[in-house]
Length: 177
Image (cartoon, rainbow, N blue to C red; front, side, top):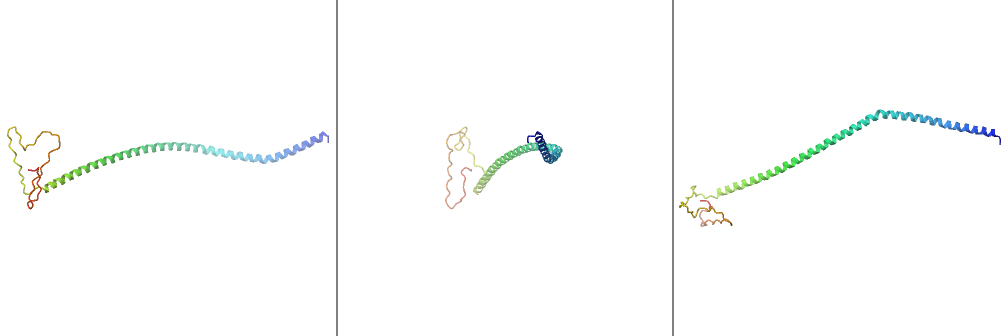
């Protein structure tokens, strides 16, 4: 066993078997790598065809979304202005309704007072004005009103004399002649 030629031959035989085994295993692996390369090439071609239009569509969609956002912002601003105008209109309408209510109430109270006054006038009273007192130079009459401003409460009117029971029950206004 010391023959070097024997060891050389054995080494070459083992090398040949190893290379054969590697080639037998490498051939199917290289075929699969070829198929994977063709499949990757097809994928890259498909991406090359479809990706740029898709990216362009995504970019345009982003621009359209930006425009829609601007339009929505403008619409919201416009709607808020309309709401403010409606609130102002409602406030003005309330003020006008309050004014109308006050005016109507005042007119109604005035009409009611006029009606009551008209109903309470005595039947036998004439429509002639009361005679005026004669002026005596610069003297004031006791019946003439004073034009001086006084502080304090106004004078209270004296009530009219009471009529006896059984006579006319009409109410007499002490301020009318």
